[in-house]
Image (cartoon, rainbow, N blue to C red; front, top):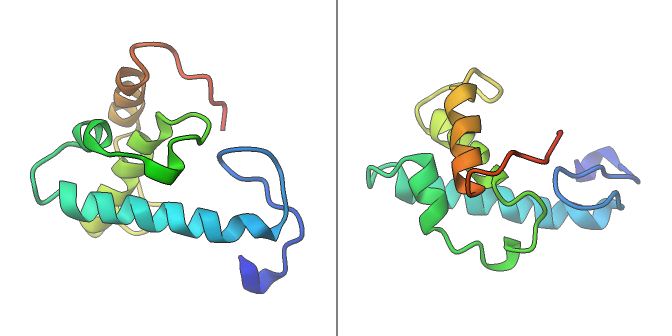
Length: 109
């Protein structure tokens, strides 16, 4: 996104801001890829991986249950699914609710 010269960013987590968000988003995506790269070969499901992951600097992000859906995507890409290709959305959403303590999801993104 940086090369596009965006002045306004509408992130998946947090308030609308400027290009200063790009580094944090890239860091979060790399973090997710790292979690998936370790957890998937260890036989963990995305939900198990999310539950075992210390979110560290990302712990304050809104809608933390989204890590589960993001891990479903990362696992699929590790399996060779093209970016944006189909994932098991029902399982991902069900596991997001489980990660959220059984409470309904509040994110409408």
